[in-house]
Amino acid sequence: MGVAGLWDVVRPAGKTRSLTELSVTEGFEENPDGVRGFRVGIDASIWFFHAEYGKEGENPVLRTLFFRCATLMHSPFLPLFVFDGPKRPEWKRGKKINRTSHKLIPGMKAIVESFGFEWRTAPGEAEAELAYLNRIGVIDGVLSDDIDNFFPSNNLSGNRSNPVLNAAGKDDKNHTKVYRMSEITAHPDIRLTRGGMILIGLMSGGDYHQGGLDGCGPKTAHGLAKCGFGDTLFQAAQSMTREQLKTFLIAWRHELCHELRTNSQGHIGRKYPSLVNFVTTDFPDIDILLSYINPITSESMGCLADTLKLTWSKEPDLGKLAATCEFYFEWGYKEAIIKRFRTVIWHSAVLRILRRAVLDLDEKSKGTLLPTTPRKGGKPTPEAIGTPSKMIAKHFSSLDLNDELDSQDDDEPLIIKIHSERKHVSTDGLLEYRLEIAPAQLVSLAETGIKGLRSPEGPDEWADEDDEEESGSKGAKKPPPDPESHMRVWMPACMVRLVEPRLVEKYEAVQQAKRAKKAGNGRGKKTKAARADDDDSGLDESPVVKPKRKFVSKPRAKATSKD
Image (cartoon, rainbow, N blue to C red; front, side, top):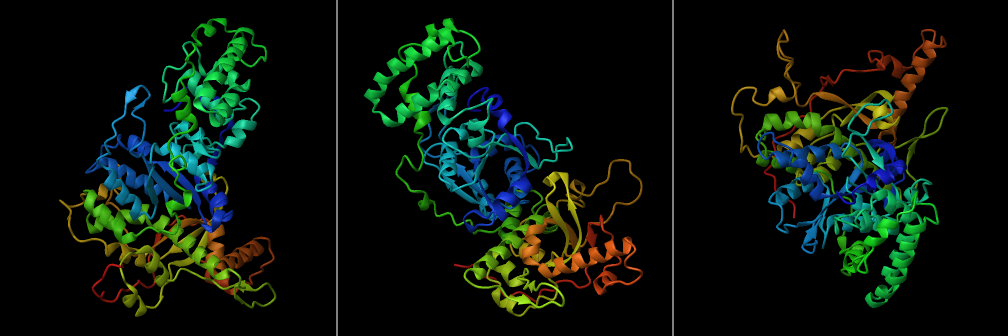
């Protein structure tokens, strides 16, 4: 897609990054504009293009989109999906564009909204709108495999068309190539500006003029861009009237032909006198040039960025997610939904709950000093904001459950304890804690959205997708875990430390005692925390443990929708 061969030109500037590490360090920790996440723009049409390959089950395209959204929520990304608008070009890549809206757009919007993601419709092409939003700082980057996002942009894009390997040489599905316009411009082997990229599109072919200049490839066009022809063309097109631009192009073409004949600056490798014959008096087409330089965006239409009203405060609605699955997918009955959510949603839900708790903490700490608990012989411990059930119900459910929650106590918190830590290659060595969580409330919130519209068509209809062992294996299959039983998930340590400082302090005390014992300094004397944790191994590979107490829901009052 976009300009043929341009990815090869800019590839040396790409840096391999873990999606988790990128979103945590540059989103959550750096905290741009106080949103505690990495704001990423996504061209919805590209996701539709890739999802068309899905063939499984009912609504396979929406199924693929659902699981891609679930994967995206695995890290603190704040996605903004942008759909093509009514003013997109009639022709692109030599083909007439069908301006009719994709029939599955309503379904995709329902999925996007259920995950708490943002979406908007661009006035023209989504890729141009995303690049504009990236340039003015509304979003922090663009997740795409379309090179066009560079043209009006200055920050980030990723090409996921080929697998990106981690430091161990494996495709863990969690790495991407990150490209920044500043690094593309500064790289000694690339030295491309926005004007230079537009010149390559005009000369070697792009979306708006597929043929380009006959006989000119990306390599030659790149060399001419290094000579500055793209920059001067870009500046003229931005500052001149159409008539002035026509006059400017006469001298510009003369200088371009001179460089092709002589290679005076040494950037195109050799002389190309034959190419001069193809530089006609109507090159470049002014309409095509202006399409690259001034694409239809909110800016060109006179709409200010603040009219988007992006607050980045939405959270996944667990009940709506369950209802969406029930409506669109053949496995949309209660048992299968809850079972699948345990493997693909609960981890992400816990991460978003931690982020929400930190946002509440940030809000409380504005202009105030956070309370601390005195501690013997050391620094005071910050008060733990935790993850109270009322906060979870308020932000992660659209149903009015306040009356019910007022009668419930947090007998069992969401996060029980920290079992171990790691620095894994899949997250580029980001420190993570392995948490034991009690998902009972998450299950309860999801169940509120299930209306009982579907039922399993037969025994074990869905079980083989996650639990069935390989054909021919001996012995009975392991029964599925109790939906409310405890489970363990890896979470970024920086998030856990802010929300559950006491659990972190207790865990670190246990680890210190273990290290002391191993070094011969413990001599049988253990701390109280170490004795309580003696049955835990540091590696902890057990995915599920049974809870000591279950989250017991009292009979629900009839739920009413919020205004």
